[in-house]
Image (cartoon, rainbow, N blue to C red; front, side, top):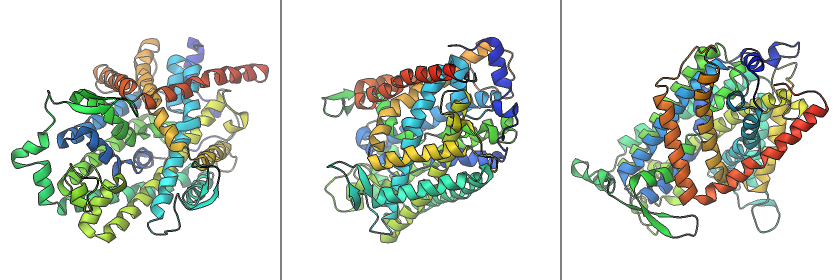
Length: 514
């Protein structure tokens, strides 16, 4: 149901916390803290791993770099577009609010529903368990196979890795209940540490460059670099998990591997969820989005060049040496670990594990901090539990929202299904990005006079280019990766009856706030 013009203008210019005597959000974050949320939420463990799987599909150094450059271009265009929406509506909830204002409360709810059920909580669970897994490098007893309680033959139960994840998630949830300043401080420290660690890895990688790898990946005059990347080159891609193999062109294969690179760069928009707590958000939100995504994606691209100058792309899964396994078959896909081992031997593996521990800890904090603000905004609209829409009188933090998020995330940790669920929603996440950027066009038409302190650079060409590119990726994923598409759509669609249930409950009691 669309908002009326009067209600829409009121929603844009005011917020419930500004018009009541209830506790209000504290504007405790400046540009540095906002940028730290962007960068900290993006950098998890993906950049250290996914290039192995991508390279097996691409089979070309040039295409590997091209895939990351495509990710960089799309993400920065997305950040430029979200900047206008963020400056226009600096409200807690971010993307939820933009979808609600552009297309109506149903679309906002479907995003919030999917975020709570899988996207945010599933990511926190996966990154938290990754923390536990890499802690096992230093404490061998921490392992996904070391069960404390195990149910059935699957992954349901409590093992030492997900126990560590639950402890970390509990600790960081507790820290964030003390308020945005405390949560932002933790984020600033760990984001700074992991960005410096990435810079260090890039520097070490170039210093530890391998002449044999350079010859294999670049050759004389870069001939090897471009091998397999011609306009007429074809690449084998399996349709589904067990389907036939199709030979496809470079545009199609680049779209297929975006499952890895595009979503290793995801969560950059989480800072918009915290808009109500950022000082001068009309300036700092757009700046943080552009600076944060730009720096991270530059580092990601440089990391992949490091991989190519230290390890050959092609490899043998049966090989026993780093050079023999190459990027394609790095042990457990840990390409960055293989690079550090090449530079420092056994010590390199521990150094890389320490970097990933710092990275995942900061990532979990950023995701927990930001996600709770969306559920708070949904509650303010009468579309989630009423208690979730309250702030703590002491810390002005959405404490109830934080602990509800904690509970569901811990259940996902115990279920062992978070990885599968995240695979399922990859397609849905991209659809929500497309809808949000399409909302930029809708709001330019329906709210032409609304204050826009920042206007999207390159509008309408760049936002349209994003929609076309993301639409192409969605189409290719529907065809070649159906296991990642239809389940995600089902999760989103299940939110429709839940939405109408909340509306009915709201109309039976207190009218929901629009």
